[in-house]
Image (cartoon, rainbow, N blue to C red):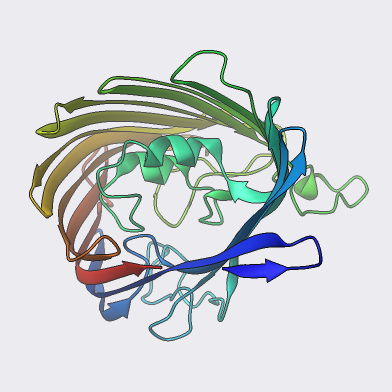
Length: 360
């Protein structure tokens, strides 16, 4: 525990250290596969170092903050780009640059009390939070979950910069309501349409939990942005005239601690283009181990004239073993296939990984 300043507000240092051996393979149509084997640190929460704190202001009101940095601990890089197609292992175009060093995962300051809570800064999108609450793979940054390909924006991020998020007070036990407004970084250059309000958006989520049941509905609207083009062939592209509208529905039921089942559905539209998908999952605890499997499907429709609809299929196998309360050994195997209605231009991706995750 650290004590900062003369008012003795306290701050906690925390972090995640995640390293895994990962084998990736991506094949586009009849082309030669792009492959990558090595050590990575993004499959089970990623690597992060954070600081968070709270100060009692009196009258039931608290001030709080969080600053969280991300990094690729295995080689100092946050991603890579390889191969000759636009659907590479990192989801970036071939030859695209990658960022090095430390990145800003989250950073916000806020107030909380009987009125609820308000947070201002860079935060996770509500649609991503909704997806994560029901994903059996722990929101792993790997192929095998169609809803994740729906939610990620065209830059590959699941966080929103310059966001104001308000959580309403608890009117009903088990009910949570969040609303937010985000602002993009792009400067509107006079009459230049290409920069129009890029990244500005609104979002909300409604969640309810009672007994073993949980359900969430979340929605987000973003201006002048598209889907993650590197992950999909026919995903909708950014539009200066049409907003990207994303909705996520999640349901789960814990069967008396013997097993947990979940369902997630996500859909995003940009004008006439769309991408949607769902996941069904089940996890079974076996002492210190947990075995889980999820599979789903979906489809895409590009915004170009005459764009062909693609069919999506994906699955993930997950095995976790708790070595302690803070240390986890895990295995992940994920696959995803995107095929056009005529059966051509198929994109096949697969990832297999063994890793260790330690939190502090």
